[in-house]
Each structure stands twice: as structure tokens, then as C-alpha cells.
Image (tube, rainbow, N blue to C red; front, top):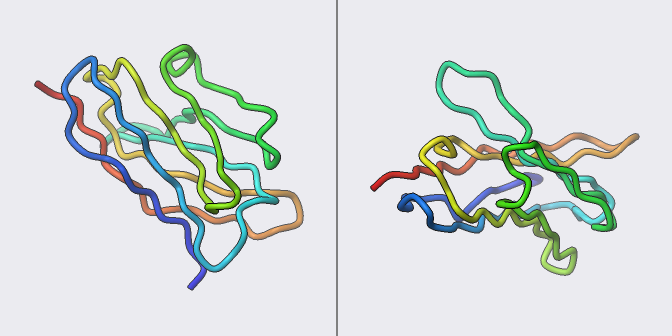
Length: 117
């Protein structure tokens, strides 16, 4: 079955860290750029950051710069979102999208991150 699956979410205290994974099943993620998004109830989806297919280029939203890092391991068919210095405002459903011109677009179902003491 072709799908993207996010994992690694959970409950973390303010100031803590989490690393999320976005793993592709049924297709190779290596030709795809991958973007991480987040969304809270009642709010629009916002981009967290992205990584190019080769991993050489990353791009981050202002709130993610200096705290979040996106990386990929194409051998494991996985893209990561490392999040440090987490704040309550980072609480959201985080999900990933794989996209590349001329190829199908894949979305994951998301993993919940809750930052609370």
C-alpha cells in the first residue's frame, strides 16, 4: 500500500525535544521533495519547513529557524523533523507531504505533538 506515515509525536515538556519521522511505504521517497506542516484545531495549516530531494536544500518558517532541523535518509526511505526548545505554541498535528513535478503527491495522516508541563 502506497502511503506516508508520520511517527514520533507525543507529550513533551516545554524546552524539550522530539524527532518526528516521515516514512514512505510502497514507493521510494528519494526523488521527492518533502515538506512538513502543522495544524491546530480551528487554524490554517502552516508550513514548518522543507527539504529537497537530494537533501542539499532546506527551507524553514521563521518560527522553526534555529530550533527545528529537517534531514533525510533515503536508504531508510525516511525524512526527519528534529525539534528542539519546544514551546507550548508548537503543540499541533504535524504531517508531511512528498511532492515532485510530474509525480503523484502523497500526504501522511499526521502525528500529534503536545508541549505541556
